[in-house]
Length: 224
Image 1 (spheres, rainbow, N blue to C red):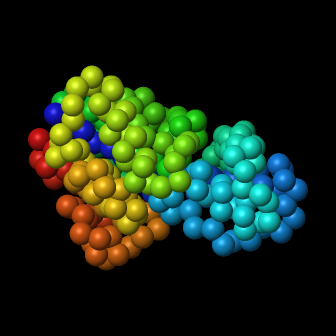
Image 2: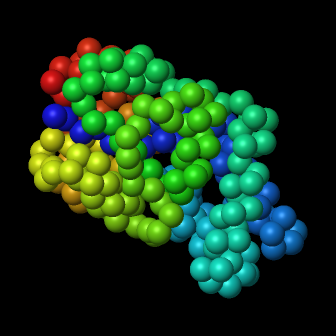
């Protein structure tokens, strides 16, 4: 049974910058930051790593207590930012998830740098959360490879059996998605619906590099 692990931002949905806006507003609200500095890379990284670096860049000690305060404030601000920014589901995603869910022959999970409640908030906003049985999240990990390992462990727990990494596919939009897939011995589909162009993703040598997820039939054949 193929196991398909999806990234969220830039792969399943585009939030219109809602996550970044909520995180930056949380810095202002929780820590009184007056001047925001755009020096932290968000692409493909975990919320824990992003929060640590945001605190450091703004001269705040990145203790776990401060990271948790930033996280909790961010989570409270995420729903209104999602409503304000609009956002969209990426091309082909609804159709692909519908086909995979209908077939009931695949295990669908998440492999995301979002903290779990942030992932649930984002996907619930777009009506996608119910498709996924389990996942790895960015609550406790700074490194995306460790999120991949926790996602694989979550799949094993959900299925209550050993999992062959050859049966696992990671779907993501960044070079870090390709890297973390290889860290667990999984195959990978890189999709250029995020910030990284197709040529950059192709250079990472994924199993498939696609402009978007619209070609459901091609993917379903690969996962048969």
